[in-house]
Length: 397
Image (cartoon, rainbow, N blue to C red):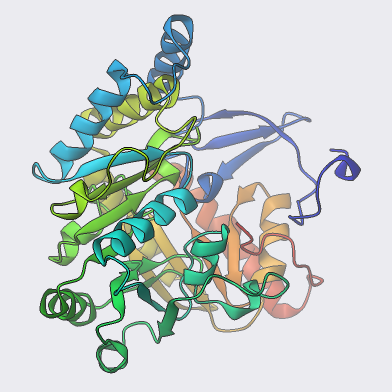
């Protein structure tokens, strides 16, 4: 790939993929790779999924774009499907990405606060996007550098520290916004005590609890949405990544009264929720349902965890379903990633001591066994010091 034609926003590996099938990727030389990254938790139902491909092709032949000034059948069907996964609640705004979905959630909360309440209480280590407001909500100061001054009104406190959140909250806050599992920080689950405590704080303050489910949603953790396994209902949650299997689609889902806060002219998008991407997403929901992929995510996640825990050099495996963070006993993750790629396994690192594994939900048991065996060999080499340093593969989305 000619890097001179692209902005310098990623340190790309020296591999060009041209085809995918299920959990496998193939490069320009025909080499096969087991994909444990799925485009960073995006290709939920596998590369080249026939059901999704046919839905895209059929819809592209019928209707691609009419703008949001008109309705389309795929958008209507997808919004109904999403509402069916929540038990019947939630009005949906479709957009193009997770960052945009989070921007929508922030705007909903601020409008509901009618100016007096405008601040958002978020978590240290959080990742909510790269647009200016979602970046300001992101609790990683190193990502703010060069873009200050960021929009005001965002306050961060330590994740899983309910006392810190409670002491920060006052009547200037319009919402609390967190990820039920922090993804880019290294797959750190929120504790039940913390998330239920945030629910109580929001109820007492009369403000919405917002869950960023951009990475955790659409079956990734074994339920449609991670909050369903945690027993905590948000007022607003956001989705993207796995929702359309690689096509650009995001969604902000809000229960009442927040679902009715916007009026025409408050918010909008040109491309969001277009017929092709919505048709693809409906096919994703169909595939997850018909192949029992939520249950499979739970089962395969447990298998993956049991295999990883037997590897020397693995200190901890955390997460849920097929969203796992592998904590290493030594800081060699950035060396493991490119070596694993050379050996035919795609994964990435969120730091120098944590590997992130978010494979397609359709990955087979034999592929999990093969991939873990390769990772084990690479990790052993890294611990012996047989691999040089690299920064390729570190999280940078």
